[in-house]
Length: 437
Length: 195
Image: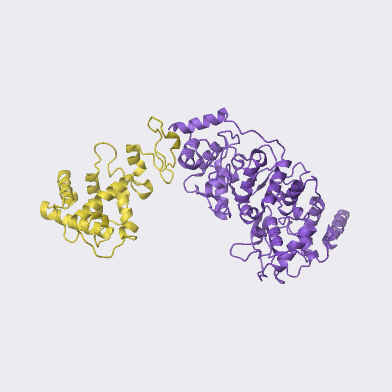
């Protein structure tokens, strides 16, 4: 018995000794990856543009607080992560950060005090930002942002996720090389790749998460990169697959969607809405073109001819057009609630009402996005060129869980759509979740 | 809930009895389609009078009130709709007691029809309430309660809409433009009720 105790104790001690360096030895910060002239500075306009591209504001600004003063609650599978104050206030913000400290945040997810940030901060992607741009971002936050003295709530996840040293081990596993390498020998494609893979951190949502929730690659050489993910039960569409927007839409349509949140097929909804409103609408035409060219270049399928109306679509349209009182509840609910805008062909109206036929939110494996939109409605972003915040009303009051389940199932299995049914308990779960937000 | 169990929000018991009787004369239960009672028009009127409509909340209610003004100048009584109903019912019952020996509700349907007809033709004068105004108000409320969305208490189970083949609050019939046959689907209400 005693021997056993000693053996266990010895194992624990050995374990602690093994972990000790991870916990105790300071992490080396990644240094600058390119040489930059020592007197390098960015003019104000350029640095603000880069902050837009990196889309810092939506996460680091909470409603009712000053820009970049943090305090936004970001839900994660492990608990709520509170975004930090990144104004140059010395006490509560990043005013005391040197350029090296700042770069370590972007490249290594390291706070000035050496603590690891949770990877809600997309340093997996930001670590490939060029030194010029790191300096420009630093210049902007130090000189162009008003310091705001505003403490934010400390993130307190439950054990074991509150052991931030564990992230160090995760970083060894998850992080790729801290340098962006142009691969295409083409200025436009390489610019597009740089924006999408680094500042734009598109992969943070649009790439699947593999073991331990690391992004499945951080550039287009990885098979899984940008092939779709999931946030909070919502599908995040693939940007490369055969049914993806980059494949199905023309360059012009893809560009319109990015710049205005709408085009002839779709309207943006969910977490992508603030990305359009706060970031993408400010991009130069050249950068938009570069993103579009890159996304089309890395897509896995060649451009497809316009989808023909198949027999299934014809059957759906004929059923809805008949207004036959004996039809099932799903199509009946479509006529009663949806047909006014989305029409019996499920095609909506160009630039105004999104298509439901082939819509990735409708046909995704995860039905949370579709259910949420029916329950609480949706609203497009307002942009300089398309200011109208077109909205879909909420149907949560009007339809029961069973009715929404039947309607969602109809939407997922009509026209050319062919996805699994939705159960009423799934609707009840989403309704509960929305009520508790 | 059956209509008998309905607890009026605005009307007293006597007033409620009058409204049940009067609406039943204006849209009788006999004949084609539902009557005012089946469509629960009295509930609609009661709820409206208990709410902003009864208070004339968004009406211009300051004078002058000129009973001879042309109709396009709008409502000309100093009484708010709830007050007009209250006074109108009381005065008409007084008149019925004086001329027929009992309140409106105790008279025969034929007598009630005659009284309402006379009221419409300005042949009955009700002190302090312009009689024609009261009849107009009552008839208007009946039409509204009969055909309004069921969420306001009347048009119970969309019976009036079913009766006239009105398809309700369904936003689009684009695919039916130019189709030469009757639209087959029953109505839907604003809250999503189907019939």
